[in-house]
Every structure is written in structure tokens, then in C-alpha cells.
Length: 106
Image (cartoon, rainbow, N blue to C red; front, top):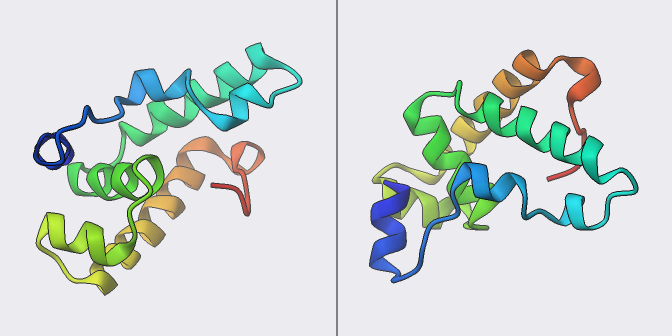
């Protein structure tokens, strides 16, 4: 879905592996190697989500789309998108553990 949407908008989708090396966190990091390790762990965790959760999270956080935009692309309601984000974030916290979560940060 993400790739189809990106093609429709005539731009290349941000790929998860590429995105791990092109983040604001990495550019601003005091410890770039540590930040790369953390980013890779996050993107590995994203791969453990369902396809639907991955689509919603990529569109929301990597493409910066809001819930109505994601809903229109994926053919679901805005409340469903928000619920999917909430459940996905909970799952990512479980996968990464409490010491790896980034509360309050996108």
C-alpha cells in the first residue's frame, strides 16, 4: 500500500533500511554509532508488526501523513488509523522493552 501510494504521488517511498540512516536523531546525535544501533533496533521491531500496522506507521511517522490522509489511502476510517497507531506503539514498546522506548518522541 505504501509503495502504491508513493508511486501515485510520483515519489520514492522511504524504505525502512534507508530510513534508519537518514533521521533527525542521527544527524543530531552525540553518539552517532549508538544512534544507528537504536534506529536499526526500532526498524527491526517495525518489521514484527502486521502489514496493516506497518503501513499505518510508515505513512504516519515516515511520510508525515495525518489520520484522515492515511485512512483515505488505506480505505479505513480515521478512528481505525488512530487505534492502529496506538496498538502499534504498544506492540513496539513490548518488543523493544521499557528501556528502549522513546516516550514523547516521534
